[in-house]
Image (tube, helix red, strand yellow):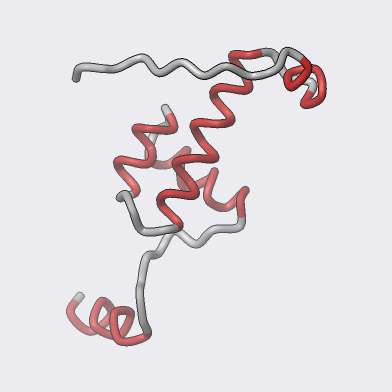
Length: 86
């Protein structure tokens, strides 16, 4: 897997306001972004876990922490189809 490094500039006081060091901030930001993109149905659980730097099980725990369901269904019909086809 190849990677790309992305750099952003933030005011120094952001870290003290959040009481976090930069490494912890970056990890939390990766998780928050992955959770949000998963919630918006832009990425799969597997891809979200990869972006977050977590195992799939750890990502499911993160979803719970953020109050997001691990199930992606656009409608009740999607849910019924999933249940009946399984």
